[in-house]
Length: 268
Image (tube, rainbow, N blue to C red):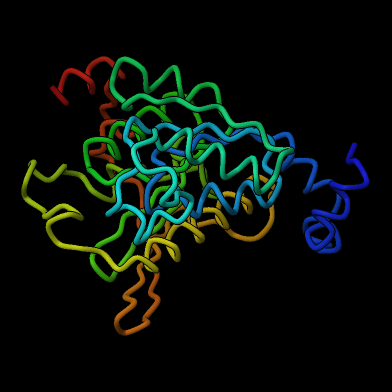
C-alpha cells in the first residue's frame, strides 16, 4: 500500500492508464542494480529513485573528483573526495526517502559479479569499459536477469535491452551482447573518456533513456529494445535503430555454449 504522501508523489504515474497503481506497485517492489555511479549511472539513479523504484543497488569503487561534475550530476562540489556510492546515496535520500539504497563500494570482477547480479531483478550497466560490459552481460545471462546497457562516445550513444535467457515470439533465443559485439576490443584500442572527452549532456540523455527502458521493463509497458540497438548522433540529432539477432557462434546461448567458469578463464 502507498501512504498519502506516496500517492501524491507518484500521482503523475498513477494517472497513466498504462502504469496506474499496479505499475507503481511493481516499481516499489523492484530491486535494480546500477553498475557505475558516473555519467550514465547518475541520471539512471536519479530517475529511478524519482520513479519510486524500491531498492537501488550501486556498484562503484571510485571517489568523486572535480572533473566528474561536468556530467555526473548526482554528485556535487561538497562531496569531492567521497566515495561515489555514498555521495549518490545521500542525493537519493534527499530526492526520495522511500527508496532503499544498497551501496557496493567495490569494483565488479569475476569473483563478485554473479553474487551481486543474482540479488536484483534487473541490471543497468553504466560502466565505461568493455571488460566490465562483457562481464556484466555474461553474469546477467547466467543469472537470468534483464540488462539495460549503454555506451557513449564523444557525441554519440548506443542503448539496448538484453534478455538472452528468454526466447522471442518465434521460439528463437534472444540475442546476447556477444551477438552484437562478438570480439572485445583490445585494451587501449579505443580512447578513454579522459583522452577523447565527452559532452556532459549526452550522458544525461543516454542515462535517462536507460532509466526509461528499465521502467518499461519493470512495469511491462511498451516495446523494449530487445534485439534492437538504438543509436543516437547528437551532433546531427539523428536517431536510428538497427535490428540484430542471435548468432549461433556466441558462447552463451549459441550452438556451443560455454560455462561461466570457462568464460572467466578466457577473460584472464
